[in-house]
Length: 292
Image 1 (cartoon, rainbow, N blue to C red):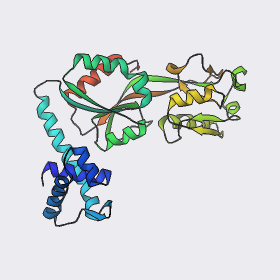
Image 2 (cartoon, helix red, strand yellow):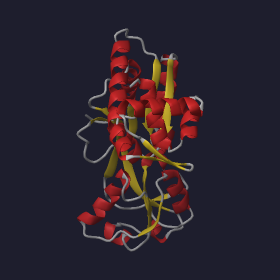
Image 3 (tube, rainbow, N blue to C red):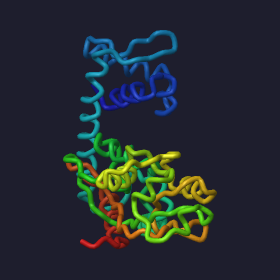
Image 4 (cartoon, rainbow, N blue to C red):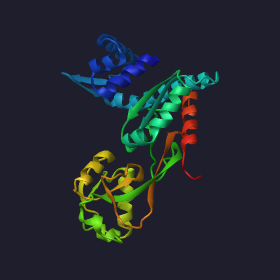
């Protein structure tokens, strides 16, 4: 069972299509089918059910997915460890980041990185912090720079980089904008526009209201903070935003609550970081404002 065949198997399993997997791997469909057939012959088991254009994993296929991922991760880890011995900062660095971190925190670091390490190819993925967190847990990417989870996962190493202070905001025309000495019970009387409650940021806000046994009325939900800022700017509700996003388009509410989220870098505890990854973390540390 060779590595290329396992990669083809995982590609088909992920996209549910032999033709799409072939496009992704820059191969012909017959080449991908041949690699899958070789594995099926070696294991004496069918890995996919093919009904018309639909391709689904069999029970044997489901069983192989987890094992194939582990095998490929171990091979990549071994290759990375050997390459690291040279001390050269090169190759591909696969990392994920949230849209907010990518827009507001990373540009300076990225610019510095590509200048210092031109031999590194960045494979950058934008996604919600929670999605990136799970992909690192599963070992699919080398690292992620995201909003850190309130409780660190046992499979991850999480390092704080920035303290992202949050403030309560609304539009300048909103009724709350002119009120003084607000508290959470007053905010509870108005609709909020917040990230989904399954997000790390959403949980922070939800937790504050639950601590005071208050109902949080969600008028609208979106995980893009830039979209939230636009929606509150036209008067559709109040929200919580990082101080880095505050300008004349919104009003900061008069409420004495000190809250923040932590932005940082995560990677798998059992994954050897490449020299490229170590160099990136070094630059993140140099940009850090987090009080250790």
